[in-house]
Image (cartoon, rainbow, N blue to C red; front, side, top):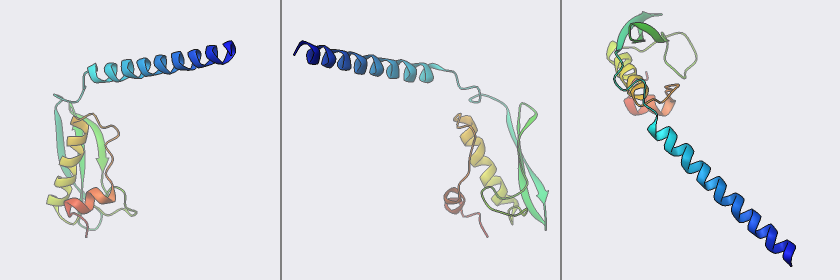
Length: 117
């Protein structure tokens, strides 16, 4: 009986310690300063294959993203319009500003933005 009581006490203590550690980690992540919140980020629309368009994203004047084709799709062609490329580039910048790294773009994102052919 003493052994099972001791085992239960240890299990409970370990669970409490794990919860406290998780809270501390979450707090540390929350307190970390976002390095991209006020960074100078510029987008440039670039020509791509077959008269399509891609984009570059520069962080403080240095290349961060070079995307000549539509992200998430096979092939080398870019967006049909400059506006489509700009819409996706702006979406990626928003992700970068929110410190979502890497700033991925899904097919669902592209469909929501209505930028696919």
